[in-house]
Length: 97
Image (cartoon, rainbow, N blue to C red; front, top):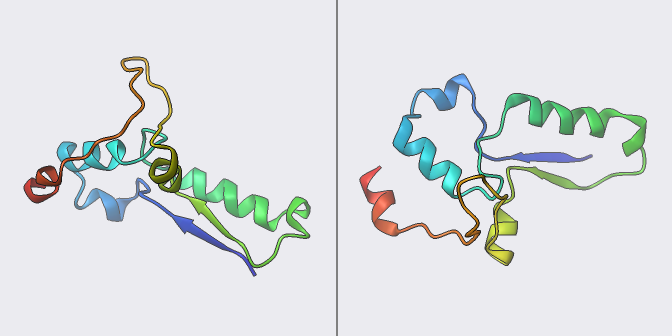
């Protein structure tokens, strides 16, 4: 048995609370610099259901944009407008959301 641990995925349910400010905070906290899409989760599930994963068991796949990478390496995917890969997220921004 395996599991998929999902992160912030763009869905109708998330859309009920998602505004520009909340989306920016979520994206800023994600090293991949974007929200996940339903297709990202489907691709992970497809792999786990395929013969390629026939010897994979007892694993939890984090399909979440890499928050563990952020916490250990403090880097994110490069963007065209920035080469400073360090992530900072002020506590005050959470209180304003």
